[in-house]
Amino acid sequence: MRPYDFTVTRGVAEALDRGGAPGAAYLAGGTTLVDLMKLEVLTPSRVVDINRLPLTGVWTDRHGLHIAALERMSDVAAHPLVGARYPVLAEALLASASPQLRNMASIGGNLLQRSRCGYFRDTATPCNKRAPGSGCPAIAGANRSHAILGTSDSCVSTHPSDLAVALVALDASVRLTGRGGSRDVRLDGFYRLPGTTPHLENDLRPGELVTEVTVPRLGWADRSAYVKVRDRTSYEFALVSVAAAVLVRDGVVRDVRLAAGGVGTRPWRLTAVENALRGRPLRLEVVEKAAAATEGARPLAHNAFKVPLLKRTITRALMKLADRP
Image (tube, rainbow, N blue to C red):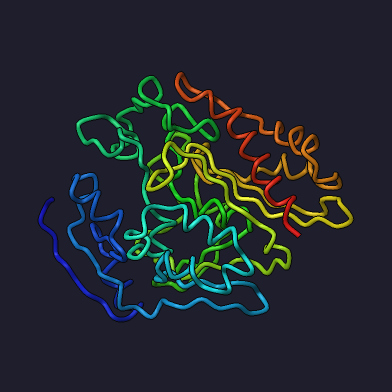
């Protein structure tokens, strides 16, 4: 790890002033930043500790559910408002990392965590995310865990956040605060496709902070679930995951929200599958047919299994909800 200056801030304005300087990085839970600094993937000259900022709380109003960015993952997962009204969020959080990490990691930090691609984390290998223009060895190399949707000739890395998948399914937005004020951005549009610039992962501007997450009011989001398929049952990133929420009346799907993780270069909204389900009964044969509407996949040499696995995971998530009242 390289030397750096360390600053503790107690107000948002102070944090923005110090964090807006070139070479600065914000520290919340540190569960991603510290790892990457140890590997010298990230080498900030200044680390700005924001843990004392007044960015905590979980509450609801007429706009929906609000989660402040410095809330810890474990606290949000255990919050009664989240568990009762948006169980998909609690399930996604509890499927993430380990209990120890969830106790430390912040909501904002989780949404901004960096790629778990081994090439990105190995400074001895090329990586367009880490060193633009150097190449993407994952395309022809070890790519079992990599993306099949939203890829480019520059990057095939998957987005690592479970929570982001659930939030994208629910049309959530993030509040981004900078020196010029705050702006709200839908999370589905916040994350960028890699294209030719995979090092630009999101719409966060230099010096900005994620200060809040808002999930729109959705009266039927209590019928929701998160299904994660992985190589082991704890502390493992998704091979495929699906966040689902469904409104069923008189045996027919009136509305539905679906997003997938582990398969896309960003959390992947499954709008074609949603459209294929609306107005149809929530039965196995209908769900299996609708789940096939996942077009545009570009599997690599070692991850073609994700195409049928995604369809099965969609089916599993929806049929899990079919059994709920």
